[in-house]
Length: 390
Length: 240
Ligand SMILES: Nc1ncnc2c1ncn2[C@@H]1O[C@H](COP(=O)(O)OP(=O)(O)O)[C@@H](O)[C@H]1O
Ligand SMILES: [Mg+2]
Image (cartoon, rainbow over all chains, first blue to last red):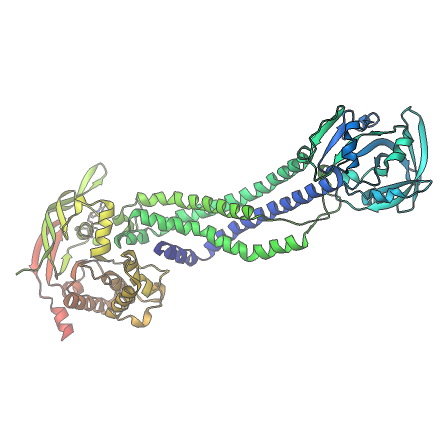
């Protein structure tokens, strides 16, 4: 108690210097919590959206289908396995057929991927029910980015050209029946969603598909020959990788700020032990042991972290709370590595993150505060009282 | 019957290592101090006064011989036991006051009692009493930077006296004070010596102090050259 009070008074008494240290340290807190919280929010959002819109509870990919290789698309399909039909009928799996094509918006040519999806499916959020209209034109739904990039609106007709299973080119008009908004670019840009059966007919690939998407409440384990199971965790891995890479950038800033604060506090401690050696001698004359004096100075230094926590809380909590509520507007088209990104990201600050950061800073500051006090252990009280340093 | 002997120094020397050799700061000291003394160690600068006071105060140890303070052999005390001895039984007053600038008068005086873990009620009473002794009851909430040198030294006296130690060691307590404040300080200490019975040992070469002493030990080159009864008249004059 006595040490804490004296330490506190001395620290406050040191004025500007203390506050400089404290403010730098509080920046370190707020920056790391904000940055980590932002990434956490992004990560959660990206996972949620990706599961919702694209991968569900996991996917089976037809063995020749590689979503990252457009050249594979031509051959990337096969018969939907018979033994999967029960799962499909019960709404636990839904087949999607992917096929390369070209479309001609306003006379330009643009390559697209046709995706055939069951209009009745409820597994991913693509509004496929809009495809159940009965009409002579082929109905299609597209994402808003695809619509904007190609100036397409609902009811627009657009010519598409594809090659069927025999390699014969064929062309027809499709009609945009709905435009959906999603954060998941990979189901939006360059994608034209058509009714599955229509696409199968167009391509002369009856009963075939490229992907089987599992419902998100369903954990697919069954294996089907000719199909490769990609578990949800594997499919989400790229998100984790991007987040990890982004975190490193934040950590660098955090450690630089922390290092700066550590250096400043170390320097403050060295200086204060040097300047206050007479006080140290007096404490010893009054009956303190060296250990007790060391404790006072260590607590005094460590208290920077405590004050920084308070200061960071004063401006950090309202600020972080505000961002968590209103979200952080992302600039247009920050489409990092195909990662799902919302227009607004809502940072999330788990208690573990906040407490962990506080603890880390406290420990680091305590160590840095303690190191210079070893000088005190070598100090002879008589010399200290005379203001000399041995 | 003589009062209790509280300090006994026998055949004691103190040397400091210096450029490969030794510098003898105190040589063959034999001294004894009894409870209730008001004694000064006088002598020119460099004669060893501070060194002697530091050893009595368990801040330093003899190189040879022995120093027994309140039944403790200074040479044999561990760092912790020496701190304990100072904490419980010794008071220090320095030329430079050495107050905590960030503490109020009250907190400065309270500090030794906190170290002693005295209960709050008793502590409060003792602090107020000690501050009253030195006549600073109207300044309890001031901090040292707001006080004059004389007031600071009075706070230091209150801090040394608050735990009612057996022995107070004062190293050149008036060296930074003007005549008026020096007399004031000495009268205060003399009164405390008389009323509470605290033993005072000074190191000084200030004539104003010397006039208050009842015993005067003269050091020269680290040796006791004179140990005499003094009149202490200045104090009596001030009293009447
Ligand atoms: N720690 C030390 N190391 C070396 N010499 C010292 C030390 N302390 C005191 N001395 C020397 O011992 C002598 C006596 O010093 P001191 O006791 O301070 O004298 P005084 O208080 O009478 O002026 C001085 O010559 C001083 O330089
Ligand atoms: Mg001296």
